[in-house]
Image (tube, rainbow, N blue to C red):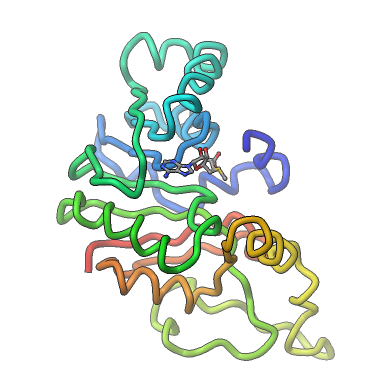
Length: 224
Ligand SMILES: C[S@@+](CC[C@H](N)C(=O)[O-])C[C@H]1O[C@@H](n2cnc3c(N)ncnc32)[C@H](O)[C@@H]1O
């Protein structure tokens, strides 16, 4: 997962959410963190934030080795903590500033994704924000206008003489969609599909930042 940084332009992961807007010492909970390469980039860029990495104990054992090599002071000062946690169980980190999940929801069907999101919603405070970093699929036809009032949600139309589908069916997210389905009943989602799972788990999309070709997009949610 650390190599994902090399698949997208530098800074892509950092630009989708205004991390500077968070108060000093705010807790960012990285749910399904892996070794925490997403949080490492955030910790290096935003020194005012604290982090809790959550994954299986075996993965966090590797995370500790990774962080001791990359940013040892974050471990020694307690700025970054590790917490073994199954995201289908009750969320132990209550009312953080942010729950962030990178490339988690696309691993799971709607039924499972909604369970994960419901656990986060139950632990959220009124000001907790949910930051989901995943691909957003663009349909090769006009998207539903359900999300037209959310800033940044509407994708740009291609200039003439290109066809309205802009060759979307060939973008990497479509290939990833099929891989996710084959591998573990996962799915890359359109913004309308994200809107549905957010709504069904008590979250409301407040902002969308689309990455190039929809990859590494950021969908921010607030408690509904
Ligand atoms: C595709 S990786 C993403 C890792 C990380 N978010 C990143 O972007 O680098 C999915 C992660 O979810 C974790 N995971 C899978 N099932 C989990 C569960 N039930 N509870 C917590 N973590 C889980 C895996 O161990 C893995 O680290």
